[in-house]
Amino acid sequence: MIDIVPARSLGDDAARSVSEIFVDGFGQHFTAFAKDPARLVDAFAHTFVLDLFHVATVDGEPAGIAACTDGVQGCVRSDVATMRRHLGLIRGSFAHWVFTSQFSEPIKDPRPRQGSIEFVATAARHRGRGVASALLRQLHTLPQYDSFVLAEVADSNAAALSVYRRLGYVEYDRKPVRHGRFSGINAYVSLRYAKDSPAAPLGRGPAAR
Image (cartoon, rainbow, N blue to C red; front, side, top):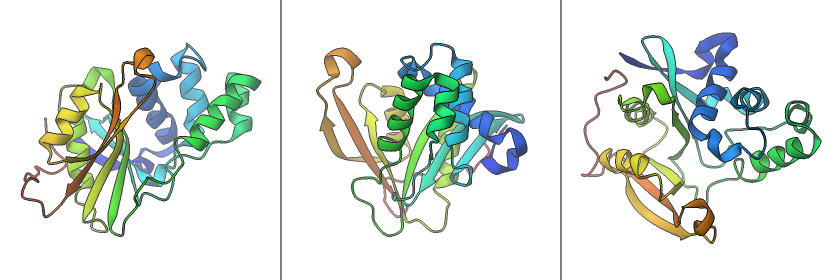
């Protein structure tokens, strides 16, 4: 059984649980900072604004994360001293710059009553069980938003794009990148979902398998 809960409800373990899932989902992009996932978890745990994160649990075990903001408020706040303590002076400073400049900027086109869904990740051992779909369906019920965006999803992430489109997301922007030869990414795709769109499927709520 999948349940969706506010990250804060996990208590003292909330920040570490979010960080563990984040590193499990995206750690391959941060090996320049540290090759040991545990070091990355320790370094990043302080950054997540827990009030904006939701956690999917499978039989009580944290299995997935997603954050939702108004597109202006940032989901992370990095402290350079903490990054340096865990990753060293140079790598910690670079990690701080990445989190501050790349992950904390407002989205390109914030709009009233539009939510920005960010940091969607599922722990490896729980993938293929509908965790991300359950998370997004729950976020779609937030009453303060009429529409949602998923900005700049790598076009190489075919599995995630398939899930988003199945949930009713429609592409509205595609930004080519220059590093495709090295990263395998040709473009970043941005998608939008509207609650009143005919393409929006009826959700099953936060519980799914």
